[in-house]
Image 1 (tube, rainbow, N blue to C red):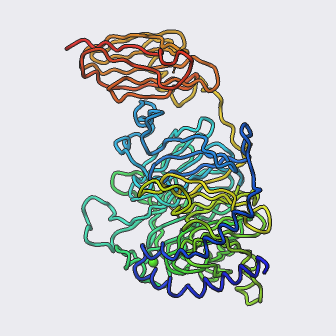
Image 2: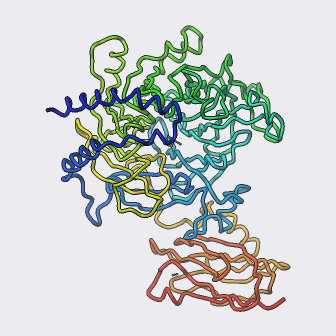
Length: 628
Ligand code: K7E
Ligand code: CUA
Ligand code: CA
């Protein structure tokens, strides 16, 4: 039997199972969504593995062709992987605190965290790389924090977070995508959970007066540029390739406060935003502000000139733009379909020449629980089916022909994945350069795929070769909670620095403080007393600190500034004060600082904790604290 026939038979079985599964999903959701793992998926997965036994092998010392940036979900971080080896190359702390680098401990990181430094957690979902003319430009990566309503920017030259903005007037930033054309001027991000406007204790018991908003953050200043109030709520989003339109799914058109209420309507919608119309209104001063915030707020509820609401089957989830710029694909979740919206019909929709559903040019049935779709640049979509534990490969133009009544098959293949996939992501899929080589499927459950590690299991990021006609499973990659999403970019599109530059803005404030103290960071180590504040400046060259002791008084507020004078690539020092919770990374040519209270008299050793030299253990010093 050919694989194609196999696919069709498999599809028949899935469709047969659909009614029961969908009934239970709609009834109680949650638990029933993860049931139904049959022996059949195990058998065919073993088969797939055998077929891929001669897959890629990146030998020791060889470099990967792609960088992958993974969100760390509720670990709050971002991880950098090499693809196709799936080797983890680095972790970038963002919304979390990090013991190794001192993120959340150092003054430099706390300045970036700002007011939100008081939060120790984050929940990052959607990492996206800045673009110029629809292509990754390798400058920044942006990511949302659902937990504390923030958006962060990571500089890809140093792979450090450099800005974090808290979005006002909304709760829980979920979907996040970037303007692709002409360049990433805006970071678009969705407030998911409706709240009273203003949220100061009024309207607690009047959900009908709760609203949420679509937000645009200026990618350079990281200020919130504007907000648009919507009906319902907002889940995922993506931008088009003209620069004018952004689409977002809404699963809660009901504005329900409970699960059952959010599933009441047969249809929810995709909201489309007209960025040009919004910008024109903001420039004309045609907006209001809310509460303490000075951000322009526009009303984009139904009937507004800024939005259109396109009905789609109930509770959609992912929203993905095809790399040819033609379509928004809304993923059905509770419906076995995805909805294809033609972007070239949107101007007519905004001119009221056509009805919202007239923009829908296809609605192929793919299987149970479609969550996200990604593209190979050859006209195919790859949609994760959460309930079926599969990825469906389907042809977009054939799905449109089928919708128009032609007798064509749009499904190309279904591949079992392990298990319950959320996002998937094909190489360069969000840009014009989508190259259809690799597909990463981020499976939420690993179950039997790895050695058991207690009740909490890793997730499973599977690498699939999509360069040929058939998808082939190549690799299982266990990951810690929870990579909702990732982005793959060609290695040549990222240009990281090898050592810090001394004028880097990342530590410019600390350099300015030294200058005000008359300290030449590159040449001297020095202690400056300023009342009960003591600033200790020291250099470091492997394997010594510029100061092997310094003396303060009990109760002093001590700021230690370390400048790593080593110019050698890869030669990082650490600075850790024992029993003080003080810890930081100082990369080659970097200046880093940390402030703490010397609250206990006595001898307190400090040491370098980045193994930097044969005499690294001896890279120590003493803080001598005189009793008050
Ligand atoms: Cu589907 Cu937050 Cu993108 Cu998770 S979201 S899967
Ligand atoms: Cu410096 Cu170890
Ligand atoms: Ca709904």
